[in-house]
Image 1 (cartoon, rainbow, N blue to C red):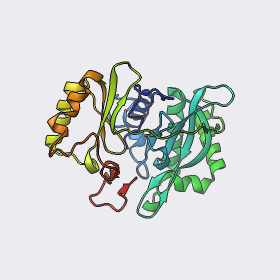
Image 2 (image 1 turned 120 degrees about the vertical axis):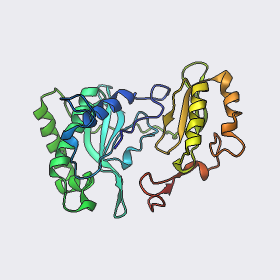
Image 3 (image 1 turned 90 degrees about the vertical axis):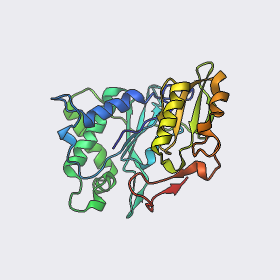
Image 4 (image 1 turned 180 degrees about the vertical axis):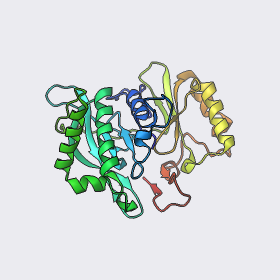
Length: 287
């Protein structure tokens, strides 16, 4: 499925890793044919089931690494201070089972080569060894449990070494333990850049009409240089809004009156998440 990164990449004063380059590289890994240089990579065209990769950019974990097959959680190396990722594995949600990702006991540097190589190795093992007869057991977590975490780690390291790209996998590093409160994405928030703010807008239950899509595009053209960012919570962010234009944006008819789009929604409406696959799915939840 589509790569998930930080919706605040490049505009966050608490950012540990800018996820944009890494997500683009992973997208090319799975969807770009290296021979024809066109979209559609036959190497990964027959996975046992869907596969999700999330790259988090800060301690907020806006990418929700705990519910993805591969979750890369930013963490500096305890000895060298080099920024890298602890690797979480196996998170998924289904009718039969909801599994939070587990510690893969691995750490890699936060560079393009290391990230792509690790994910390619895990994908290869998953493609060739995961369950294909029982659909409910065809997710990465089941394969990790079949191996055992230590043996799965050993298999990944062996696979990575076979690529001979100079990538070294180390043990999980101690995650930061200082008190930290996850920040809100909806609403008006200052950016590190002087005179700029990001404005998060609620899309109720993640559902948009054609009319609303055009309204969002109009707002983006007027206030955020045409840029719209999406969040895992199914809302949108307009980045780089000039502070002296924020009041005008908040007064826009598209965000007021009978409009479903809101900048300051209530706690229930503002945290409702719907399933992306099926209407009235039982896995829809309120955080």
